[in-house]
Image (cartoon, rainbow, N blue to C red; front, top):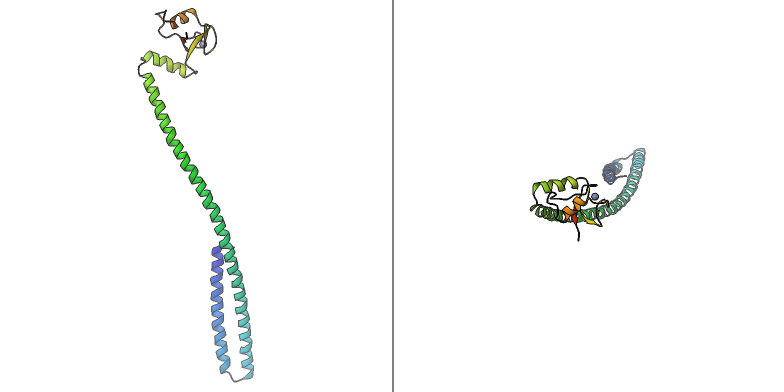
Length: 186
Ligand SMILES: [Zn+2]
């Protein structure tokens, strides 16, 4: 039974006991005043019955009080577990908030780096870079052994000479196969 129900039951029993005790006192007073033996005995019977009822109510009340104690103990134990859980969740929220703050700072720093790196480049170069970046990474790769560092296929002689600064027609050399920007790695 729930704690609140038990408290209600205890109050009801106390009321029952109170009114039974009032009846008992009334019967006892009446008994002192009667003269006839059968009336005296009838009241004696009422007194015994009422006293038995009071005893039974008190026995029930003791049971209810015991149950209340048990319910309170269980409630306290459950409360302790919940408090511990809450403390755990709050700790996790705190560390996640901390992490979110750190990540926001990292993101801001990275965005500043990107902005600084883009600043000296002109529009066509940025457009080329962004177009390749939308499809593959890395965007800029070295030429090694005459091959593209991204797709590892052979680089055309035009692109290779452009990457060495010997082809003024091609400003930004790219791989003919994968389209990445290539540069000469000496
Ligand atoms: Zn390539």
